[in-house]
Each structure stands twice: as C-alpha cells, then as structure tokens.
Amino acid sequence: MASKATSKAGPPRADGNALHVPVLLEECVNLLGPALTAEAPVMIDATLGMGGHSFAFLERFANLTVVGIDRDPEAIELAGERLAPFGKRFVPVRATYDDVFDVAAEYGRAGRADAVLMDLGVSSLQLDDEGRGFSYSGDGPLDMRMDKTGGPTAADVLASADKAELTRILREYGEERFASRIAARILAARAAEPIERTGQLADIVRDAIPAPARRTGGNPCKRTFQALRIAVNDELALLGRAIPRAIEAIAVGGRIAVESYQSLEDKIVKREMAKGATSSTPAGLPVELDDRAPYLRLLTRGAVKADAAELQANPRSASVRLRAAERLRETPHTA
Image 1: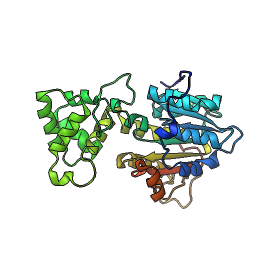
Image 2: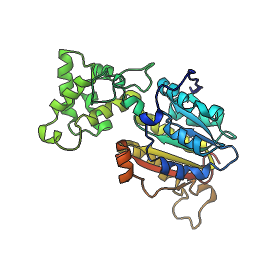
Image 3: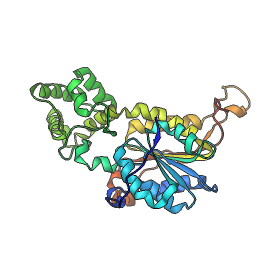
Image 4: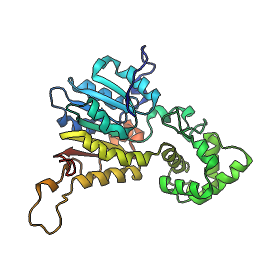
C-alpha cells in the first residue's frame, strides 16, 4: 500500500552529489523533457534513491512536481532532506514501484503522470553502506533487503533453501554457470557455521569457482550477490508488474524512461515497450484497426548505453541500458 512519507526536519546529512551521480542524466532529461511542457506537469520518479535524478528535473523544470517512490525508509528520509528546498513540488511516497499506477491516480493530473522515470538496481545509498549487505567488496551483515523493516534477509535464504532452490536462484537470477558448485559449497559451509556475513559468502563463492574462471569476467562474486538480492526483494516479479502499470500511469503524450543494469531487467523492459509499439491488428486484415494500432512510440533505437565520457565520470554506468517510449493513445483494453 502506497503512503505519503515525511522526512525529519534538519540540515542534510550528506551532499547528494557526493553520494550519487545520476546515470545518463542528460539523456533522461532530453527524453522526458518534451512531456513536461504543461502548466503544472507531474513526473513520477519510481526509484527515488538519493534523489539525484529528481533534483535535476526539479531544478530544470520550474513548474514541475516530482512524486518520488521508494520502499527504503532511509532513502525517503535522505532524499527528502536533499529535496526540501523545492517545498511542495516534491512529494515522497513510501511504496514499491509496482504501485506506480495507484500513485499516479492519487497525485497526477487527472489521475495520470506526464512522465515516469525508473532507475533500476541498487542505489548508491545501499551499495556503499556495508551494513546493508549488498556489496561483496567489504564485510557486513548479509541483509540485502531494500526495506529493512520486514521480510527474510539473504542470510535467511542461505540458511533455509535446499541445494536445488539455491541452484535455481543462482542460475535464474544471476545467470551463474557454476550455480550447482556454489550451492554445494554453501550447504557444506552452513553445516559448520551460519553464513551471516558478506565476507563469508564472498570467500565461499571464490573457493567454489575454478581458478581460470575467477581470472576473467570481473569479480566472481557479482552474479551470486545479484541473484540473492533479486530473490530477497522479489525484483523481477515486481518489475514485471511495474512496467505495464507505469505505461498505464502516463497520460497520452506522456513519456517513460527506464534504466536497467542487467539483462534480466532489460528483457522485461524491452518486451513491454515492444508490445506497446506493435500493432495488434489481426494478421491478414488489409487495414490497420484504429483500436489495435500501437499505443507506444519507441524513443530510443535499441538501448542507450554510456559513452566514454559518462563512464569516466560515473563508473557505475558501465552496464546501464536506457529505453524510453511515448504514449500515443490508450491501450486497447482501456480504450
């Protein structure tokens, strides 16, 4: 259930620009900007994080209201502090991004948003805090929950899942080719002591992967940590619901931009945007049926990737894939 959030008063505890460099910011502004020309446009930042994208849009579009969604109470509080100078033009909502349609219905113009922005994956706030358990570069508790107020942690998953389930998680969500080997090592390790720290898990994964494979393809722990994070937060199921709802949340003439960071996310985004940009007129008819015409226009040719300048300024942009679309008409089932 979405709910309007409040942040504690007081000076910002950190400079947001130091904590989070928005990925592909100029591209996002250029893609969404044409939809923000109304007298009082509304944009939903469905992945608020530290508020870097929201700050830039509020600064550049003087009449814009941004509604920021995040499930992480700490993100809501810190972004609220950063965006406090914009007053009522920023509205924080604690929710998951699959609530985007309901949020638009409550805060949008005539129940719709003019633009929706989604920057998927782990925020800098979460990744840089070893206490959150997302990073394999330090040592902290194996939590990985984007909302720490409830639900099982990564440590809980590792303690309870059997070998088949662990293998499935690693293979399906991490695309890890050594999933079975890693799962077997996890079961052997937990028989000796609970696996409760990120450092423990990182050591187990490194030991499970053959030495030649460890020397190529980046950090060998990346795929396992990604897989557990996705499982703990049910990310792909949420995203599968969120993209269609986000499209429905924007008004005709509105725009949506989505930044994904791994192939499983990008496949969902690509599928839903392609669906909207494809005619559903039955094959063989000599004319296009008006109510079956495409309801989206793709704004990017394939996915936009970071160029050399972006990579130098923001190394975390290395894997980003940005896709965007414009809403042309109501979808057939809602027309």
